[in-house]
Image (tube, rainbow, N blue to C red; front, side, top):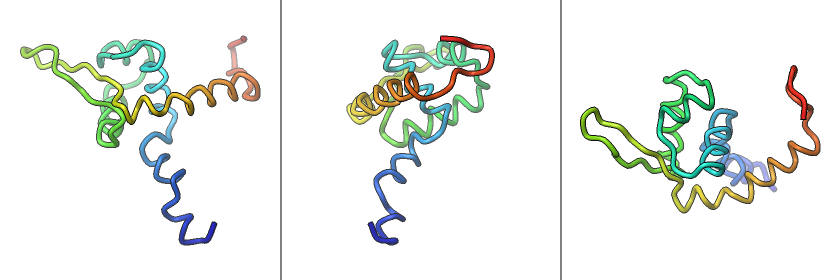
Length: 111
């Protein structure tokens, strides 16, 4: 791989869309539960509304999630994995397997 190829490599482009902890944990919830609502995600992840909104927006802009309105008044949205998002399944499974085999437990939590 040349230096020029590194600047626009597929790993870098992917990490721009899904490369932070919150985005990966949000995606985990979609693979475990399917479609999700904002409040459901916030309840499970214990993340601030601003952080969650930002990550959902980034995943939506990256074509990984789409949102559909389920309530007009007040406006409420449900999020779904797109085909592009579903294609992340093997990567998510690989991360789960690697984490189970090689990553240490979080402080205060056992297996």
